[in-house]
Amino acid sequence: MNIHIKTIYKKELLEIKQDKPLIASLLALPLILGVIFPTIFLSLGYDKSFLLSTEKISPMIKHFSSIIPNDINGHTEILYIILMYIFLPLFLIIPISISNVISSSSFVGEKENKTIEGLLNTPITNKELVFGKILSSVIPSILITWISMFIYGILIDVFGFNIFNKIIFPNFEWIFMALILAPMITILSIQLVICISSRVKTSKSAQSVAIVFIFPIVAFVISQASGLLIFGIWMEILLSFIILIINIIIFYSITTKIDREKLILNL
Amino acid sequence: MIVNFENVSKKIGSNYILENINFDIKKGHVFALLGPNGAGKTTTLRLITGLLSATNGEVKVFGKKISSNKNNKIRQNIGIQNDCSLYEKLTVNQNLKFWGKLYGIDSNKIKDKINELTNIFKMNNKLNSKVSTLSKGMKQKVLIMRAIMHEPRLLILDEPTSGLDPQMIEDVISYLDVLVKKFNTSILMATHQLQGLEDFVDDIAIINSGKLMLNGNAKKLINNRWKNYVYEIDSDHNDIALNICLKYGNSYIKNGKLLTECIKRNEISNISKALFDYGLNIYGIVEHKHTIKDMYFETIKGEMNEYSYKNYI
Image (cartoon, rainbow over all chains, first blue to last red; front, top):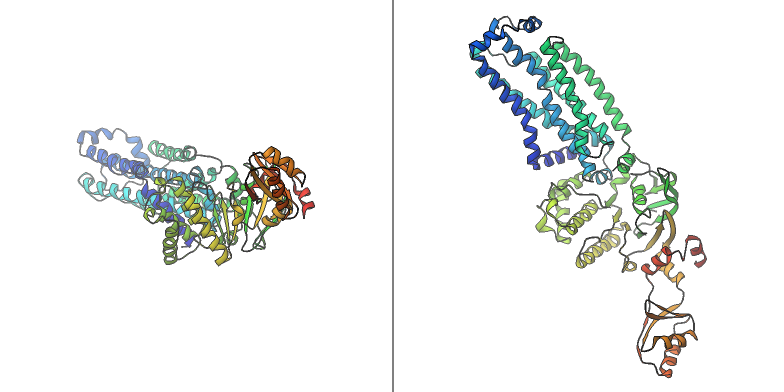
């Protein structure tokens, strides 16, 4: 890795490490999605009356009938759908929200703290600067997402074994999401923050603009639950491909169009 | 030539911040850029580092034309201390290491350089302190250390002595002197600290409202402006003394002090004899050396401009 990129990346991580309140706020969502929610749903799975009552939501099960494994029996199907499909797009919110906070505080934060001019005076190129900032936001976001997914998976497989009579986590959709889709969508979210960073003065404004990214994810969850759109493997592949193309275009556009003069004069 | 400004103008929005600026900074010279607040000093510095691009004219650094976004090799050889902040959450050591790495210095050399600089700047005991805990003066020291740690060919200092105590100012100036004499570093210094500047500075430029008022070698400018010997006379009756002095040449009271100008150095003997003969008590006669500070105030007051200055040389 280029020394400038590595230096930027290391400095950013060091700054995150020093900021304990930031770390605490970053870990809240993974804790909720990775530990609290599955614990609640799994404990409901041990409640026979709950499982029997879920059979009434049969239209939802119908939409997933083609992708639910045959050995998942009738009254656990709905729990399987919730844990393996409804939660799937929800986990995309973790890297997006974490990277959103890190990238806005790292890029717009340089403007806010008046450190950007010093940085732009160094021999670093625009590409190195943007790439270093992206990396320093992507890596912790993805790592935290993977860890929360890992804990989520352990909880499901250990406590869900008695419910489903088999290990159900991970399936191909989760693996693809963790390795390909989540990094892609995280990079896109970070690049959006970088795009707007020259127009906003505070990291909070950058965050509020970039948070719109969460809305499509919520829309996915709703459409998935209503059966309008199933977030299956083909959907993931298609989405990843589209986002990859958008990411390349945005990266090229950001690095060639960063105007140091505009950045400085807008301070 | 390290820096060359040729008819440089800079327009921001609808206002010209700089107009038709010309000056050069020579290798191994200390150049002071002087001017009141809002004169265009920071814009000038930003044009040199390529953060801003000239609207008209040409800026050359190390003989190469500078443009806004592609000056990474040029920046490698420039060190800048300005009012940019340090990374407050990081320690002094972490800040300096980060900077050293950005300039491509290897880890061992960074360590040695940090040791050397913290010794000079008396910051050894603050090396592992977070920048947010430091005083303004200490932060200023770290900013200077950060600017010089990669041994730049051109060092740009914006108000380097601001916030420093008198002893530290002495130490910083002596160290900068070593950089110039030993390593032939060129220094561009924007400052409001005019006292004693002539001991350290080779060339000056005074800008006001974006216009270059004066530029050249500081000693030559002063000698050309004040060709006569000026003496400050302290007597028991300065009003009577003034009338006697006027018989010999231009004399006046400035800030309560009697000043008399002599074309030749020995004229002061005749004047002092006349004062004694009149029966005045003379407490002191001191040659008044003109300084950059005098030059600055003369220029800013509008008593001189770039064009009238040409008549002096």
